[in-house]
Length: 266
Ligand code: HPA
Image (cartoon, rainbow, N blue to C red; front, side, top):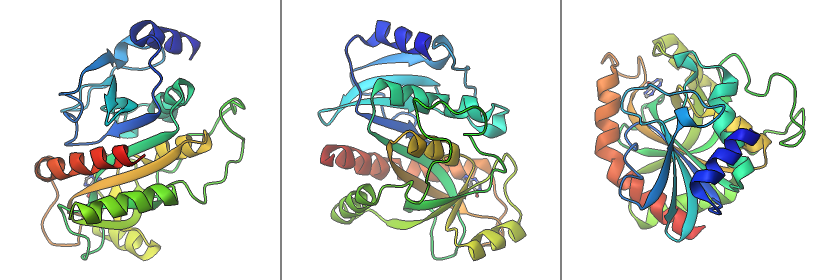
């Protein structure tokens, strides 16, 4: 960690980000046109080189709407075989860099028929269905406590702000509960039925580990899912990754708009 922070300082000098952003599928180019310093993950001590399709795998340091931000262009997924420690290490680094707020974005399947692909879902809570927890192992008391409370991972004030902005911008949005699975296989219709009964509205293969660690570290979290498809069995159309990419691509302009207005409001 010390080495990572020193390396980043070498590249960014006195730049002190207050906001962290994790870019999910479709949003990868969000930071492309901002004047920034980019550091590939593979160069940062403790990071591993990310290989997921369409993702660059770098930290981007930039100013957005007058706020200093560090942006994760691409994330580590548990289904790629990375440990939970690797998946959540960047969150700990961003905490040590001084961020107070983390915006987590992702692509997700719509679990109930009244949630529609193309809508953005502001996450109100999550269900950890990954069968493990990123905080397992020796606790680092400098980051958080051994048994951290998770009753409000997704900050209510930030949710309210995001809702207000979505309303003002007339963006199609929902609020709801995200369930995180390991992937990489999509779910079965029976699993989706179960998730719906549990109260989940969207399902995806990320976000939960990062959100747990951010909350543990005392970072305020806003989570937004881009609903890219109906989850398995909601309709009788089979799922495929291309549909996820295509829908995310269609929604990305309004997603970016929401993000920028949100950041401005902070
Ligand atoms: N299931 C899991 N992850 C996803 C989905 C889905 O239907 N869509 C996008 N990511």
